[in-house]
Amino acid sequence: DYDVDGVMSTTILYKTLKHLGADVIFYLPHRQKEGYGMNCDAVRELKESGIDVILTCDNGIAALEEIALAKELGITTVVLDHHECQYSENQNGEKIIKLPPADAVIDAKQPLCEYPFKFLCAGAMSYKFSKLLFEAFNKEFVYNKEFLSFAAVATVCDIVDMLDENRIIVKNGLKELTRTTNTGMRALINLTGISDREINEYHAGFVIGPCINATGRLESATTAVKLFTENDYNKAYELAKELVDL
Image (cartoon, rainbow, N blue to C red; front, top):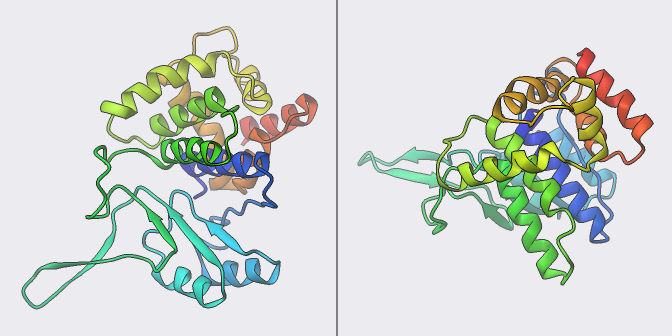
């Protein structure tokens, strides 16, 4: 997705996979040209460019046709989403859940999911998913603090219920955001004039969040992901300036 939650999710998954040695790209749909979520043209384009695996983040649970096409083209697909499942009703008015034909569907809102907390946003889900991937590769989770801060921003900006795990993620993640070592986030914090503050939910939701959202609404959210994956401060500064100007 091209909102804050989608940008944070994409950044987390991209940096994780790259760190673990994957040959990986990120793809965000253009709001005006493609609209929300997966689209069949993009799936075909990715296949032609040699993509073998697609991980969705912050969408995909409703992309039945698009994921069916991906599977038809031989692409392994993993859905990482927090939205409600689609369903139809039978003659008795009973709900029939319709899940996409992906290789894995990770969404706590699907009926058979036993995960106890149902209100994580995609950024928080990606943070947890990333942690598990590092464990699977027997690698130290070097991005723990950084990704926790990203999950906190996503949680605030996606306006999910501030309960249970979400409250813990935000409380601890905002502390990490104040002292972030992410080059792009540091540049954005400096340019928005909040570098001397203890960053709280207001700064996440009404200063940092709108800068990220503006890219997806006015141009392309790709710029925001580039910002948070950039290690050169001068380049990050120019990207952050673009976000602030938008």
